[in-house]
Amino acid sequence: MQDHLIFKNIIEKKTPANIIYQDETITAFKDIQPKAPVHILIVPNVFIASSNDIHKKNKWVIAHMFDIAVQIAKKENISQEGYRIVINCNKNGGQEINYLHMHLLGGAKLKSFS
Ligand code: 5GP
Image 1 (tube, rainbow, N blue to C red):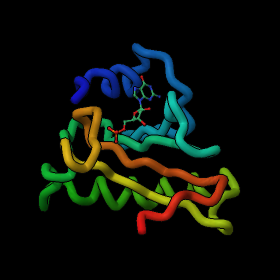
Image 2 (image 1 turned 90 degrees about the vertical axis):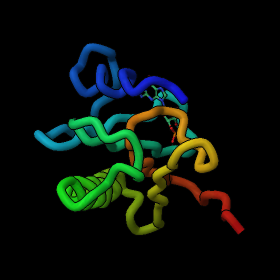
Image 3 (image 1 turned 120 degrees about the vertical axis):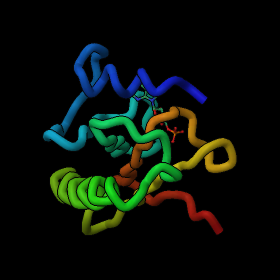
């Protein structure tokens, strides 16, 4: 698991990244190693380690992340053909960075899980 400071520094613009959207709650930027033609990461500005740490008081942040993910999908022209939204959690879920993030993937037919 990699340190959460990677994403904190991107949010605070201390580390360069291709930020495509930012507001007072979340930041969205292009994945450095895209797994699809469109691969965008959406993160909360306030640190949340993983989906295990979503609770009553911060669950509205997740709703906002979804809302913006759909808006970005429309802007990137992938909404009609479709896309995938993924949140990996911890070791078995394949979470590499210890900072909750949503993957928005699209622009091509993605491999099926089944
Ligand atoms: P995870 O496996 O934790 O769900 O996803 C972490 C993602 O962060 C990976 O897709 C990886 O390519 C991306 N990533 C790791 N380091 C950086 C970085 O420094 N900049 C950006 N833009 N993406 C990163």
